[in-house]
Structure formats: C-alpha cells, structure tokens
Length: 213
Length: 213
Image 1 (cartoon, each protein chain N blue to C red):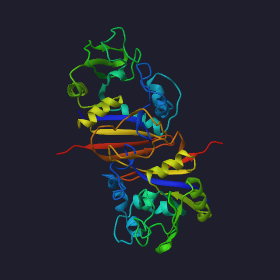
Image 2 (image 1 turned 135 degrees about the horizontal axis):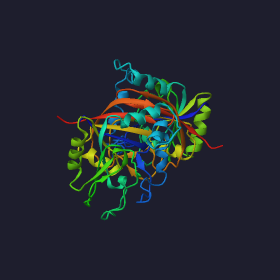
Image 3 (image 1 turned 90 degrees about the vertical axis):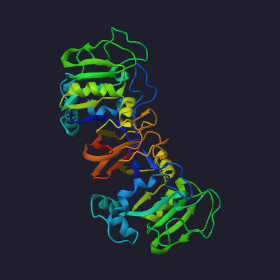
Image 4 (image 1 turned 45 degrees about the vertical axis):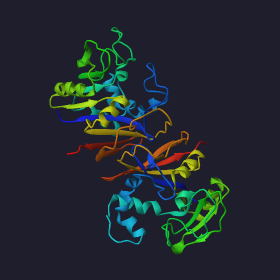
C-alpha cells in the first residue's frame, strides 16, 4: 500500500454535490456542473467505452487518478442505495461493467454478500466501519493506492479520522450556493501542496496531508 | 477605467475571515493564517516600509495586484469602524501612511468629511451605496482599475450586483471550519479562467466575470 488518496471535484464555494440530493439524484441539483470537465475528456469517455472526447490536460488528470489505484472505498450512496436493507436484485448505479475494474469496499449498515461484476470490479459490503473497510482495501490493494471514491460524507469521515494521505481537488469555477460541502467538520488537517495543473475549465490541486508524528 | 477588480485570500473551505470577528479583531480567529503567504514576501514588507522578505512567485502576485489600481472601495470594517457614528479622531487601521497610495472610498451609513493621509491616500466616506461609491472610484481612477478591497461582505455585494469584472483568489491550503464565507448569497456568476500561478504555499487563480449581454 502506498497511499490513501481521494480525488474529487469541488465548486469554488466548497460544494461537492448540489442541494436536494436523493437516492434518484445523488449528485443534487446543479451537481453535474462539477463534472463536465471530466465528461468532456477522451479518458473519461474511454472508461465508459465511448469514443471521442478531448485529449488535453484534464484528460491527463483523469488518466492519472485511476493509475496506481489497487482498491476503492465507496459510501453507500455512491454505490447506489438508500438507508434500508439491500434489495438483492440491485447492483448499484454503475451498470454491468462498473468503471472501477478493482475491488471496491462499500460502507453500509446492512450486510450483503459480495457482488462480482464484469471487468474486474467486485463490490464487498462492509458493516464494521471506515477503519475496517480501509484495512480490507489496503490488503486488497497490495502495493498500490487505496482511493476513497466518495461521496462527500465518506471523504469527510476519512479526513476527520486522519486516514487520508492525499487529496486531489478539481476546483471548478462554478458557484453552487447550496448542497453538500467537502470540508464541514473535518478538523484542521495540515495540507502541503504537491502540484497544480491548470486547464481552462478546472484547476487541479493535489495536496499531501501531513500526519502528526 | 479598465476593470473593477478584487483580490482576496480564501481558505480551501471558502472562508475569507475567521469566526468571532469584532471591531478589534476584524479578521477573526485564525484569519491571519490566510495572509501569511503575503506577509512573507519582500513586496508586502516593502509596502509597509520594511526590509527583507522573499522574492518569489507570491511576491510577484503582491506586486501585480497593486499595479494599475487607480482607486479603491473599502467596507467600513476594513477601514476600521463599528456601526455607530464616526469618532472624528479615528483615522482607521492603516496608520499615518496607509498602503493604498490612492483615493479610497469607504462605504458607511454615517457621513464624515474626507481624510487626507500621508503618501497619497485619501479616504472619502460614501453613504449613498455601492453603486455611487463605484462611480466615484471610477472617476477617481481615470483609465486605471478600481479595486474592491474588502471585506467579504463588500465583495459579496459587488459580486451579487454584477459590478465585478475580475476576481483574483489566493487559495490557501488551510481549513478554517468557521468564519465569513466569500460566496454566500452572490448568485451564480459566470467565471472564466484568466490564469493560475502556483506557489508552494498558495494557489493564485484569476477569473474574469462574464457579464450577460
């Protein structure tokens, strides 16, 4: 295991999802505006099996953030699910061949048997908290990174617990005005700049999180 | 007049001042952490008549943001003052020779005669609102820029009114967790990237604000 990473798109006013999120609209009103930069890239389209798209600095970032990831941790809502017990016929938002192509550990309060999807993605449901989900992901990742893949509340929990090593923000020049903020109640972590990649539509800023000795 | 500009330091979570601001502590608890990058520069120190400091990318930005400014608009609190009528002996936070070296228009509800300070700064007190303060500043600036020099609520008012042409954010990798946010209730302005300057301690991002036709 090299690092526990997170990459996420954020509005200038600090939101990572719009208001009025629901099971049917987990990204909230206007939340899609945070992701247009990625959807426009050749890299993102290729991940979805689509042709076309831009080959630009943003595409390089989309390539970069999947490179080196050996396992993912996902919140229940990002997998696709409400608060109740699982509907066993439901396999999440991500279709028959999810874009992870790796072991994915889903945080939930309701036990469920693992799901094996096409293309190398497995969903393992973890009911024992963020620490054990991370341990499982570390083991699965071997010498590769573990990516905390959202949503916001999952990232916040790992950040507040001091378990995140890298935060790669894609700062989008949009003001959402409402929604879910990334940095509410995460304490006061020490961030050090790793690098900045500027494109016309988004500013990518990678930070290392310095852990106390 | 070329443009109505604003440059301001903001935490990663969107705050431009810390919590518990007061007349005696207008920047709020922890708010000074947003400005350390500037204080460290040779440029800022020279503006205060001090020697030393760093000559780096941040110093270039500090030089850049005063270049071309012909007049400033300032909120009452940034000048230094409470809600009540003026104490005529009080000449603001900025000392005998304020760092503006230009006409400054101070928004207030309480009339006061203009103050002429050393080094070319004049403070003119405007009780007729942000529109007339801007007009006065435009006239004073001639073919130079007008800078909206804060605080947060003043910037928010100009942004919400569609009167700002450029926003130059200095994004500091600090999470304040509380305080005064820059982007509350400013509507949904359209921002276009002008440029990004990355230094180890702060990411400077300049946006143009696109006005509807």
